[in-house]
Image (cartoon, rainbow, N blue to C red; front, side, top):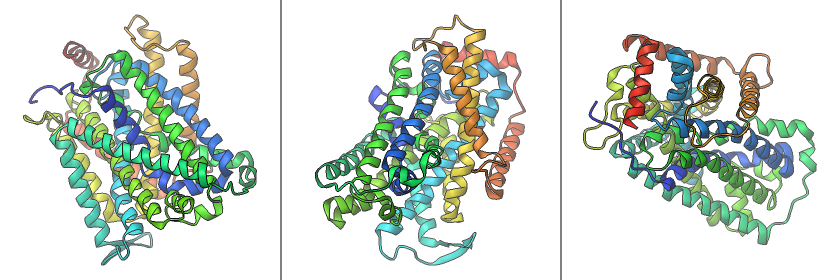
Length: 464
């Protein structure tokens, strides 16, 4: 390796990386669906419930990140608690979730431009699952991948500064919609919970983990954070609360300028709500541009997160050594960044249908990683009670048990027999990812011994 990662990220950088990653593109396209399924009150209740679930998990992360502020986050926690095998499963599942978000954004970018730019869909190449794939989509997704990859390749500070600017744009767009609802809203008369009852609330609630993923980018960047471990742990929970507040405000505002039935018929419901609130198509398009900023913040945040997790696995000799390479000038995990960018560039080749497959398959990876982090938390509380924990949870076992129940529940939602079970294409993607992990692990020489893993953790502590 060329050296060590540099601790250059401030508390503002850390916060906007997580907040910007959470408030990405999903709220622009899903707000109408949320309100149509459960009404304004039901959608808000679902996000309060989902925000509570994620907040519990984020508290677990807060304690672990403050105790082990190392690059790779979850990899270090699970390696100390569960050993090399458990750590590999946890980290590889997390990387899968992160890469799925990066690939999602590579498809979402041309999807958004197709809404904003008339005649954007040019030169049909082929069809996937009955949906056409256009050359303009592929070119836009590939160019976007190159730009975001290059930005992260050049250094973590430029990436964080880019994130701060775009997160501000998104926040201002949400605030503008809220102002429009406050002064021009008509409070359309939707039936309570859109006539769907508690079932509608749960329909929206099960989508919230994907909307909130991004808080766990903070542990990935912990090795580059120039702040106290206690503040690092606190920022994880704060970012989740801020994202939940943003989502709830947007849902309330959109629901007070148009009914769910009107919004759900629009390709970009949040932009439609803005257009109605100000009676201006131009302002609606400005909201769509804010959605583009959301795509880029998530894309940027998860390239950073995925590359650091890959670097951490390679640094502990569970992936090929080349993936632990640090750029001699920019001090970034350059090879890992290029790998993530390359995988994202492939996604647009499969067209818009790939969005659904990626979200569904990647969601299982994320929740599986969260489950193993919670297990790691409980194991370390039992096995190593004297470990220094600058951000220590009161009632840790109770919080851990609650988080365990919640993550098990969400894993069950993806399994065969559940109302939201994964389909053949999603399981095929998961299988391909497992095969890729097995191949890379084999090229790295297999799992290190527990003694080697302990030695690696001790070296991290010394470096810290």
